[in-house]
Structure formats: C-alpha cells, structure tokens
Amino acid sequence: MATKRQKAPALAYACQTKEDTQSAICELGLVQRELTRVETEINDQIAAITDSRKVQIEALKMRSEALLKGIQTWCEAHRAELCKDGGKTANLITGEVSWRQRPPSVSIRAVDKVLETLRALGLDRFIRTKEEPNKEAMLADPKTVQGIAGVTINTGVEDFAVMPFEQEVV
Image (cartoon, rainbow, N blue to C red; front, side, top):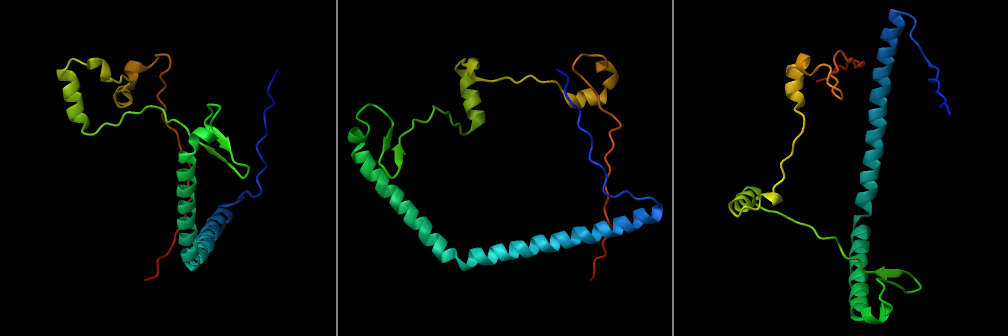
C-alpha cells in the first residue's frame, strides 16, 4: 500500500521585496521581545503565587510525608495479613499499597581503583571495552572512508537564521 505524502502548509506571509524583508525582520524583533516580556510577566506571577502559598505548600508536604510514614508503618506490621495469598499488593478500599522488589544494581566508587583491582585479579570479563567508529578521524580523512556502506560524510548543510538587531540602552 502506497503511503500518502502530505503537502507542506501554505505560507501565511511571504516577503515580496528587500524592503518587505527588512520590515519583517524589524517586526520579528518586536514580536520576539514582546513574547519575552509576556513570558517574564507570567513567570513573575507564578513566582509570586508560589511565594504567597509557600507556608501552605510546606505544611501539605510535611503532612503528606507523615501520612506516608504512618501508612507504611502499619502496613509493614500487618504485611502477612494484607498479602496472605502471596501477592505484593493489598486493596484497602480507599487505595492500594504494594511492595516491589527493585532489580539488582551495581554502584561503583573510585572507578580507577576498581579497574586496577579487577585487572590484578584477572577478572577482565568484568571490564568493558567499547569499540565504535572514530567520527573525528573520518572527518579528517573523508576520502579514505568514501564508499564504505553505512558511512556518509555530510558537507554543505546550511541553516537559515534571522536575528533582529537589538539596541541596548545604557
């Protein structure tokens, strides 16, 4: 089945002359600065609202932590009763509690010393050697890798950017 190709949306505005383009760049700068002012105003309002409610927020966080600890304490003491059929979840009408075993994990401090010890003990199987193509070397010598399947050297990619001038008032 052939996939349908979507058409690009029609441009709402296209400059017709150099003067149109200059005016559009000027207007773009005005719009971007106004957007920044609006975003800043919104962030100021959010900060003011958060600040005005910080006492309530902290009290709610503390109450939430206390409730969680109280629930966990009771549930731990009654786990056998709650999970009598060997499950890991108990339905308590108003909600569920569950216990989940985290998968095993390894944490390593002082990586260099651990690597040194592993090598000294002949435990090289616990040392990973990562092989990967050296892209920097390929960019430095693109002719050598030209024609290798899976390798493409991208050159001449061009991005378009518009940066309206802004005057800083001192």
